[in-house]
Length: 266
Image (cartoon, rainbow, N blue to C red; front, side, top):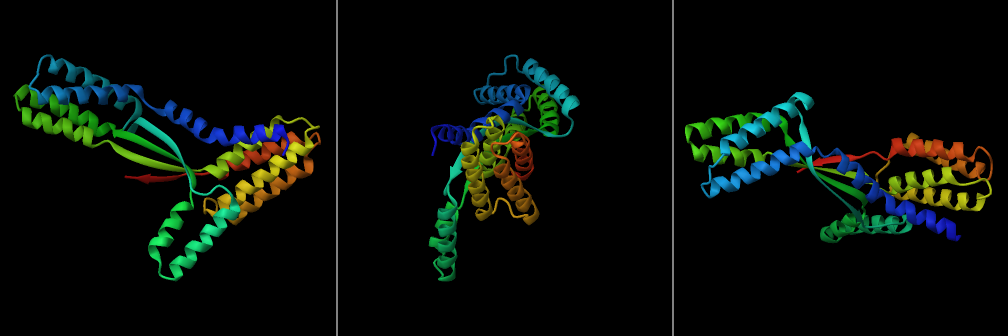
């Protein structure tokens, strides 16, 4: 493999986690992060019996929350995001072998062995996002102020705990092979016409990434698969020609639509 091709592949392999992390960090609503952090501080102060200036703190939080609610409506805002990769298998041959071994183990009744093998059939970016529902936040902070004015500290403590307990974690899975293929297609757009051999090698690796995604079940729509395969073929046929960049752009656009996501809630 050419040195330049290795550089391209290395860049594409590094981008899924890095780019996804940057995208998710931009989604965090810092004002909601601040409110949640201050509620944690209120809870700690209540536990040690420190009520100094607590009404002013809750009044400020109520105002901030009302402004968020007016801006975003009845929704849940992201306050924390963790991005990491889970790579059990990273090439089609290994994935195919593991898949067949898992089926064999299951057919033989060796369920623990099958479960272990199935858990290896993953190659994905995992995004775990903590979100806080604005309606619960708004109503509960107002209720907290009422309990504080009445001197009902037990109910106040329970209400703050309820707010923090309402934070839920949403897990999103992104198919890493398709993300990697997308970034490789972006690299193809940058190549010059004389880089024909490099373009062909990169296109072949994109084909391999698509094959891996198919085996792992990240992409199952036969029409989508056929469209992607046709566009990879078009890239290969246009390598070293003026229309090469156009074909690479079309492949990248198709991969952007195909890479999808799966959401899970804890």
